[in-house]
Image 1: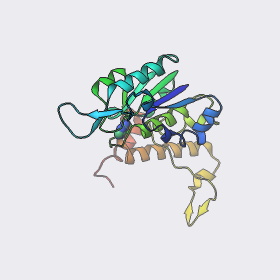
Image 2: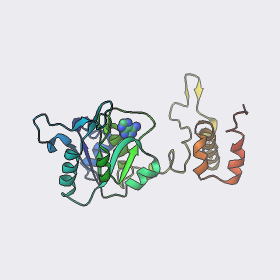
Image 3: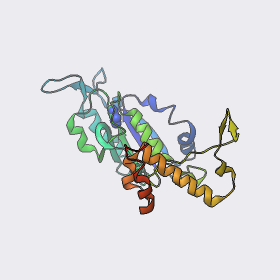
Image 4: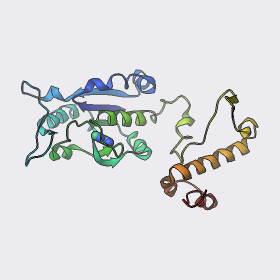
Length: 244
Ligand code: ADE
């Protein structure tokens, strides 16, 4: 898959996009990642990418010409890119969106700085995306977050194919607690059941832990989670604020 970013800070991507699983996916040719410098499509001596807001207002906006010229140039080099603009006013990013994006052949991520984009720039977007309800200084970190979440879903990227499935959000639930050696550390014990070797009991315990943890920490997720009527009934008292 091809992922390209367009930004005034292309150097920000270097470390995170070269390390660990994403770096290895690139080395193995599964991910073809390029960070473009938006200033390469400016024409003035200051290489400007931003300007004042019409009608007055605080701050500077990313202006249209470099973005449109960069888009035309980059897009002409291959199949039409699925184009994402990052903004706190976008659609919330989710595991479901990552799964959807992992099917694309080519994605172009446009990262804003300053107070955002001239509204007309969004006409290039297939989707506007936010990574959460907080304001960052730019779209570079969101582009890295989305690239990371998408890359680990690409076939052949994770050694153990099961690990992308059996984790938080795959069935709409948070992940159950997990432990490794030693069995006792600073007085804290690994739950006995996990040492029992009884696969059915371990499965049932993990399932109930995932359900309870989700009900306590993220009750909003239960609405769309894959859970039986019986499990749902058992959980109802857990998300009740009057309980415990
Ligand atoms: N740009 C600034 N903050 C952002 C956020 N939370 N998500 C996406 N893009 C952003």
